[in-house]
Length: 436
Image (cartoon, rainbow, N blue to C red):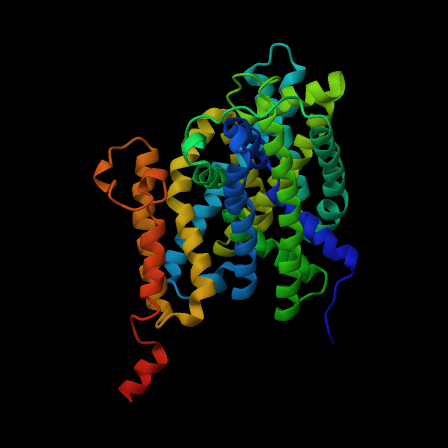
């Protein structure tokens, strides 16, 4: 019997994935990038869309093509290495960086503006309440599509459409001259800024959540799962592109209302208040709270699902562990959290990109098991050099590497390694025949 989903359920799955992606980084980074890019808006935005929309979309498709799980995606890597990479990614998108950031951004943009003298205690109380609510939603995995895809996300999307319409109809300023790297290399700078959304990491893990959600709707066949996984990815990518283009344009026309802003949250807050007057902060608060909450739910659920599969601790206990850790880390502060996360992103993002590229090139590889080991090792080695540079260490000896000056020293060696592995090494079947 052919397994199918109703159109409303397909849209709901896509909306759920979109909501998982659309969180803190997706809201705070594009406005600042747009303001700094100025009249170099188009190339900067193109670069950002490549890593913040293109890579997550391709990654979800790679997960679908591989079989719908992390284990399928990394089957040619040693099991311990694949598990270590997965654990590191889950720690980053979970309790260490991305999930706490949702609570921090929700507080900074949606709650703090209502307090004249906000104190640390306000953040502490809010972060506890925020993650308790997120844990409550994450508690019932099987209901994620119905709760997020059919209720929370449509409300969020309506708010975003209202904001985007107002931005394009009534921009609050003119495009100004670009600043810093956006003056000389806007495309590359935008590409690297897209790392900050962490959505490629999210794609590797959210794909598994979507598969679980589809199973709860009776979709178990591999062909049907792949089809609906890709459909949801296309819906989510379209939604993300719409949001990023709107926020980039908002930032590019914000110089008049948000002079000398040091982060996208400030720009967005000032801009919305200029657009909607005294009710602007309420509009923004609703959008930010829903965006950050849905992402927090997805991250907590994904982390708990994976860690429960590795240990004897149940999913529900992991929901509590991860939620408490997120609330604790959220009290560090937004600027400090972003500063800590950037070197880690530079180290692991190329590994994720390499895995995705290998998935699509697998049939061309002479020996997939050998190729995966070599390519991932090359990607990680050169990515660690890029990460060391971002962390402030002196690695000037590597300036001879192509693209190293723009933070992408890993790119050429990694893709050269993939090409070489198409010709190097005999596959297992050939070795068996030779031995016989």
